[in-house]
Every structure is written in structure tokens, then in C-alpha cells.
Length: 274
Image 1 (cartoon, rainbow, N blue to C red):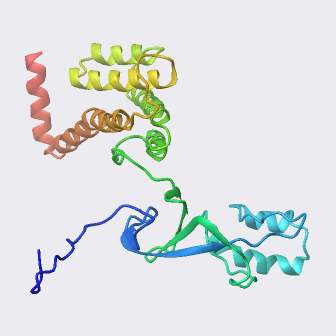
Image 2: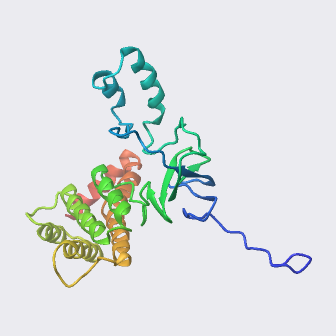
Image 3: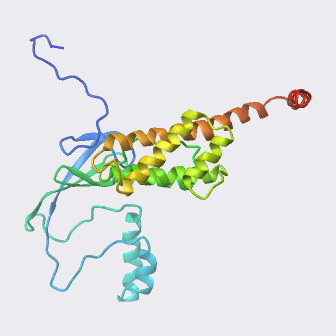
């Protein structure tokens, strides 16, 4: 595309993933594609014998019961820190002049225009919050499995092996959730097969089982840098959940919406054919 003078116009880009070279991208906190304000850091050394004060989730209890300061100073301190508790990282005004301390190089903070949360960068790597890769988990999965699924997404970039091992754990918990019998995961899958499990789902379960097992034990598969295989396991996990949880639930919901007399007629019909 060119303008009236024949100059080449840059193509419009869609939503961009987080990057150190952009001033607008998809916020890793709130998921909005919006402006990001960048902040440089300055290093101001603590006095000898003084360590950083960390804003802890239990800051109120800590200040009231453990911090050795006058009682009159505790309430103002609690009031000051409470707004920051939902954030792992935050900006706080410093008493030092920004012109005196040295600049902290290769570390930066970006602040989202939409949610005001902070992202931490070292060199060109986003180190907080952890980037989640792979698809979102199927919403019909039990909560405890979703927690493991999300943890696997958060470590995929750093450890495909760890992500694969966590997804194997997801499969094991799913089989238990489905009341599959057996002492081992292999036996539980076999039990589901004996009860009529679809062959494609069986293969998906075994793929996640074997690859996840190989990830943590010496074997023929090496997932140390194999992100592609690990990413495929996320899709298989969602496929398993769709076929074994979501679809049966949708069918049952539609069936239960039928008038009671219609359902009774269907049940009577089926009894006659038995």
C-alpha cells in the first residue's frame, strides 16, 4: 500500500504479544491490547545492615504483631501498603532524587494503562508475570485439574519436560474423576477402554501418559527443548476433556430439557427392546 507520493505505508498490525520493543501490546495481566508505560530503574544502596522490606500477603498481621515500631506508626503503615497487596510488583515513590542513584541497566518495568499492573523485564525477557503458553484449559475440567493445567502453561517456555509431566498428572486426576478403576494410570485407561472408551480418546490418553512419563524418566524421548510436542499435549488434554466431560454434559442437558412425558416414553421404549 502506498500514499499519494508513492511512499510505502507500514501495514497495520493486530494485537501484539508482550515485547521489550513495543509501547503497546497484550497485557500479560489483564489480556487487553493497550498502551504500556515503560520505567527505568535506579539503584539506591541500602544502609549497611539493612535489608529490603517485602510487602507480604499477611502484611497487616505482620505489622500489628511482629514489626517492632511504635503503635502509632502501625496503622498508617498498614494503610499505605494494603493497596499493593494484589500486586507482586509495584511502583512506590522513593525519597532519593532520581538524578543521584545510578541507573539499573537491562532491567525495566512496564505498567499497563488499563489495569495499572506491573510487568518485570530482564534484558528482553518477561520474567513477571509468567507467560502462559498453549491453549486455555477446557472450562469443564475439575478445578484441581485446571490448576495443574495452568501451572503447565506457565512453565512451558522454561521446561517443556515439566509441562509434559504436569499434563500426565492431569490425565491421572481426570481418570480418577471419571471413576476409572486400577492402581496405575495404565490400568485406569484400560478400565475405561473396557467400558467402551472411544479409540481416539484412548490414544490421546496414552500419548499424554507415555510422553509425560518419558519426560521425567530416562527414555527414548527427550523433551528438554521440545516445545512443539509439549504444546500438542495441551490440545490432546482439551480434546479428552471435550469428549469425556463436555459433550456428555451437553447431551444430558438437552435430553433433560425434553418434556417429562417424552422422556418417560423414551425410557419405556428402551425397556421393551431390552
